[in-house]
Image (cartoon, rainbow, N blue to C red; front, side, top):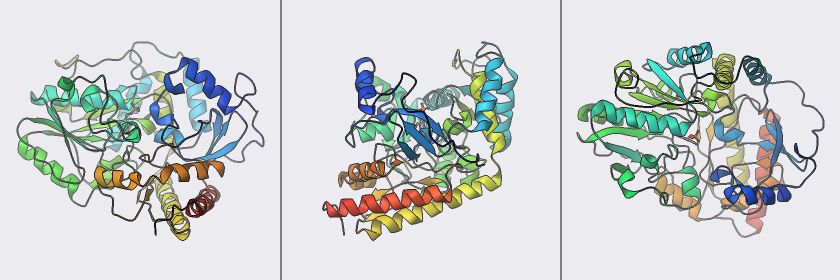
Length: 443
Ligand SMILES: Cc1ncc(COP(=O)(O)O)c(C=O)c1O
């Protein structure tokens, strides 16, 4: 899935001419709250000024100062083939030439929906939306409409986007910023949301509409489901007449062609998709059993809508990616992630810094410290050691861009070569040595 040699030197400066990251951030802060359009992009948790991306290609991004980074962010997992892959840029260009949005059905959305349903057994239908947030919000509404119940069970540290109902005990940005939830969310909006610890079977009674879960948690760092956890949830939901919702915004089409339900052998009633499904463009989807989705308007009484839903550019990109990636590519990706995780473990521990590097398929995380992490409380305990900011900065200085928050996953993709993995591992050895020299060694 590689793209051949990279162009030698990218143009310096962004579209508006030469500038520094600091100058762009200053401009941004004047007109964009906090200078970022999503809080996870802020450097508040790690210190310093965010780099402003001028362009990306393959495994790399270049900032406006012309500095190149091996990019482990990859749009928080939305990009699977690497930046500006010709499969995506050509599909989007072709689609754009035919019109960017119609407010009427298009062929592309049908083909993408067919692709998704054919890859995910048990998912009979999907409705396309424009983000993972919309997908999760809509799935919960469908579950409530279908069951006639209101209670939602979610897991502490799992993130399902920023819909009011689901902004309780969230991971990712809310965790990074240390927020218990969000101001502006009325107590009533989360009154029927029950937050329980990940990897423990909660009580599910006949007032529960749905249990929503990240089948592999990737917003409190990477935390694998304990053996039997997802299957037990399935059984408990069945016993209570509640629906099981897999939020596969991260795992969908990344963990493997069929995502986490195929990977785990557990079939939920509803799925949420985002990120990879849109090939790096704004697209999400929720899907599930035909009888459940029958409650959706226009067939049923549960309303959900979107002017740009099933957008032709986004469906073209998503389709192009899903069609391009083979089963062998997923095997390669997982092997590369395993190599990355092994290398990081050795490099960081070798410098005397206690670390765990969980890897689940293609998802890689880093927890400093040696106490096992299997839920949000233990993830928080690791983060409380405050080693991530030093690691992040050390990596950035060595040309490796990680997410600027300790609860995010790393996203090795199909563009990362073995040589890129080596660069990341070497940077980690240097960053960890610097941490150890600064007294950060934890054993
Ligand atoms: C598991 C999960 N669900 C939902 C979302 C929300 O998706 P979006 O940011 O596209 O709204 C995210 C975003 O990171 C996510 O990781």
